[in-house]
Image (cartoon, rainbow, N blue to C red; front, top):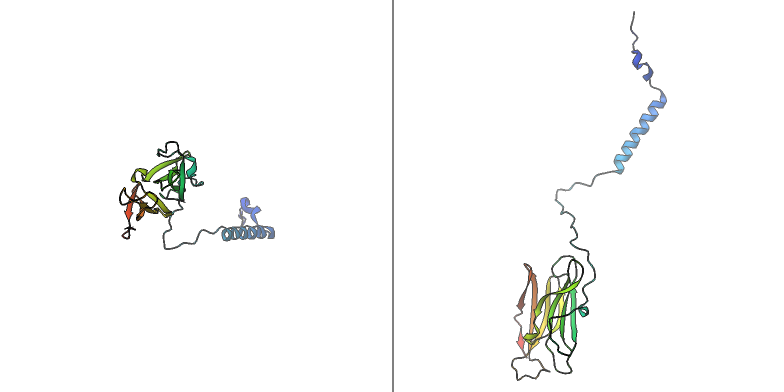
Length: 191
C-alpha cells in the first residue's frame, strides 16, 4: 500500500484563489495599520517630562476684598496700587497691593502686602513687604517674574511736611528660598 503524497488530515488544505485574496488583504491591513500607528520619532536628546500642573490657575486675588493688618481708626483702608503675577511660580497668580488709610490730606503711609490664595481658593495676606509703621508710600508697583519692584517715598526728618516726601528709594523684593528678600538700587536718593 502506497501512502498518498498528502496525508488525509491535510487534504482539505489545498489552496484556492480565495485563500490568496484573503491572505493578501490581511497583509495589506497590517501594513496600513503599521503605517498609520507610527511611534514618535526618536531623537538623541532627552526631552523633559510634561510639567504637571501644581494647581488650577484662577483669577488673581482681589485686593479690595480683604482685611489688612492696618489700623485706620474710623477711616477705611484704600488700595492705592496693585500688581499681579505668579511670584512663587506655583501656577497661580498672586497680587501685591499698596494699601493705606483714606486720609483727608497729606500722604498717608502705605502697607505693601502680598496676597495669594490658599488651597481652598480663599485669598489671604501671605507677606508684608512694607509695614505702614515705616511711614513710606509706594509708587510704580510692578511684578516681573518672581520680583516685586516699587519706588518708596519717605521723609528725612519729622520736620518735612507730610504732603511732600523728600526721599525716593527704588526697591526690589525677590522670591528666594520660600521668602522675599529686599534689595535697594544704588541710585536711591534724597530729593
